[in-house]
Every structure is written in C-alpha cells, then in structure tokens.
Image 1: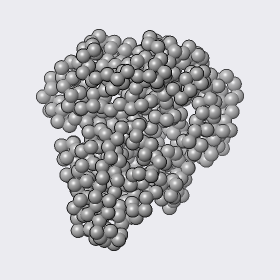
Image 2: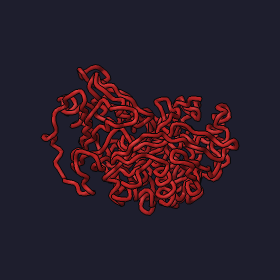
Image 3: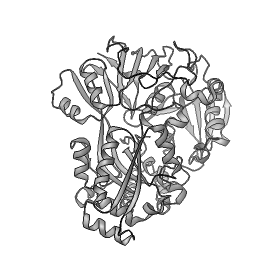
Length: 534
C-alpha cells in the first residue's frame, strides 16, 4: 500500500559543516574550522558535468546523525554520508538500504534484518552487524533521545551472525519500518566514532555515496564521491555547498552561473519570475510541502491555557501572513494536514476553524484572565521565512494586547532552548508533516508521551493524553486504510478543536537550478547519487 505523504519537518535550521573521516582527500579538521568571508571569490564557477555547486541559506554546527538528524539541512547531508538499514523511495515506500531483506515475527513483536555484505565505510572498515549493534544498542539507546525510544527495544536487540540482527519492539506498530528511515537511526562505524569521540559530528564516517572532505566555516563545505559505493560510482564527483545567507544573493549567483542550484529556495520573487518564464535557462522544481505553524511550549502555564491559544489563533490573519511571507505562494491553512493526505478534513476549507476574528480573540483573552494583555517569548531559527512570520505575528498579536518578543537564533542556540523549554512560550516550525512515509508519525511525535525529542513538552505534560488510545488504534490498523483514515481524521479534529497548534499556511519549498540538472529526492532528502547533468 502506497501512502503518498511527504515530510514532518521542523525546518528549524539549515545545518551543514564538517570535515573528512579517514580516506578523504583533505585531512580531518578535528573540529577546528577556519572562518572565511562569503564572497565566493575562491570558488570556481559552476563547471564540469561531474561537479555541482549548490547554495544554501543557513549553516549549523555538526553532522552527528543521532544529534543533528532532526534538522532538515543537516539530515540532507547526513543522508548522503550515512545510511539507515531501510529508506523511502520517492513515493514513500520502504526499500532496502544497508539491510537487503527483513522478516517480521509471526506475532509482529520483533523483526530480523539480513544485512548487506561487502559494504565499506569511508575509512575502509567493513560494515557488519557489530556496527548496527554499536549504533543502536551501545550509542543511541544510552543517549538522552534513545533512552526515551517509543517503538524499538534497542537494549535487548541481538546479533545473530555477522550479517543478521534481531530487533524486538516495545509495542506493536505496523508502520515501524517507516520510523527506521529517520536520520537518527543511520548506521555509524564503531572504530571511527570511538576514535573521534565528541568530534564525530565534524568528522562523519558513513557508508554513503559521498564523503565530507572540507569545511570552511561560514563559506562552504565540500563532498567528494565515494567511488566504492555499494550501488556504484556516483555521476557527480564533487559537490560544493556554499553558505549564502541572503536568498536574493543566492539567486544572483544562480543567474550569473556561479552556482548550479539553490536548495530550499524561499526567495519568492525569484521563484515567481522563474515560474513565469522570465529567467531563461533556470527551472524551479517543487521539493516538498508542509504546514508552516506556530507551536506552543506546554510546560508554560500561559499557553497551556486553551483560551489563550484560541485568542492567539483568532488574532492571526492567515491571508495576510501568506501574502507577507510568500507573496501568496503559500496558502492559508486551518489544519496541520496537507490536502490529499488521509487525515485531511475537507470541510475545514469552508468552515475555517479558529479563523480570524479580533473581537472573538479579545473575548477569549478576557475569559482566560488576561484582559490587560500578556507577554510571550517566541523563538525561531534565523532564516528569512521565520523572520518574516515572526514580525507579522508580533504586529497582529499587538492588536489584542499580546506582546510577542522575538528571539531568532542560529540552530546551535535555538534547538537546545526549545528542547529544554525554560525560555520559550512558543516557537515557529516549518513544513510540518510526515517525513517517514507513514501518516501515523505526524501524530506519534506529539501524542506518544514516550516519544523523543519532546519539542513542545506535550510528552512531559500529558497534553495529548486523550488521543493516545486513538494513536494505538492507528498503529494496529495501519494496513486497513479506511480505518486508518477514520482514526487519523478523529485525531486531526481533536488537535484542531483544542488549538494545540496554530497552522499558518501550506508552504512550498523549491529547488531553483539550471535547466538540464536532473534531481531525485528520496522523499525529502536530496539523494545526490542520482543527480546528474544532461
């Protein structure tokens, strides 16, 4: 059964940057980077057919898949350097990666994986079951995130041969293979990870089609083809990813031929120009869509109050948000599900729950005991879209007496603050939807109290407890699409009525590139192995 769902992404930051593990052309930098200006003068013009130059907006701090895999741009690179046992194809179906086959127990309480033989890590080490045991049982299960693992019993997994492992489940969930496609479950090499210790994030060593060989802080990072890759030699031999923080400058570089592609393009004027055929030789390709939303930190009493959340929702003019952040390319959203998904509720298009109504917003705030107003702290990444939305929200909420203090931050600061939950009342998340290929995952991340990371504190506070039975129903009825759709729509309705999340708009993310560049996305991750120039 194919479920065409795209991405639960918190595009919290575009995190890229590190150095080579053993075997690269440039020695590992052991975490020491060299600052550079962003002029790009020392970067060769977009050139040979086997070389690709990409522009990306935001830089982060490391590439440890178990720590940084939740960040979209980190994951995009991690997934070309590291690999999981299984991955999604472009349709969201599960396909083999480092596992060539698998078999569920008859009672569905565990699974046996049969691993691919003859695969090498970038440091020359042979991939075996020991690396899976190391990655999951020894390293992930003992981490802050892994210790709260919701589905998989990594502590009691077993090695049954050099190329066979057994993984028991903590609970039955028919969509569990989709969960294993996440970056945090990518396989790491025991030797390299042990040698580099806490610097493994800047010295990644995987089995993927590309190696990280250089990082010039603030300027670029470079990938080199792994020509011993088990699927064959990559067509692109070198990929340079330039950090260009101003989207309009990235577009100028593309038009001038200094870059071949702009990844995650949010420069809406330029997207519209290309769509209208005004930019000769440049194409715009939709990568994915999702819901741009305001989310709450349920550890804080003010926003744990439903009336406050309802007041905030009613004070937001979503048409104005969409015009202000994307010139109307993004469309107003009234639920956290994308049209066409099985949990989507069609009638919300006309009923517009929690819609714009300033009088109602003021009344909600009065009922909540905040007739004289209140102050909230909003955290976000420092990308151009988040900055626009933050200012728009601040201006709108002022009309009902809410002072919204804005705190845009780099990923290395923003993510820990949100996860800790001491400082923020709310935060902006972008492209909410299901990034594993299973429509259940969208709800599991908030409803399951054992799920980690607990971004909004809903797990710690039991905010979604009334929906947990429905989650278990969905997990056990995954193969019955009619029942699954009914259950997920109930969950969508409950979330919407409780105003747990305020969806702003359905956002689209684009890749702008030269005509003749063929790309393939493995769901939301750019799988560079299959990219090539005509």
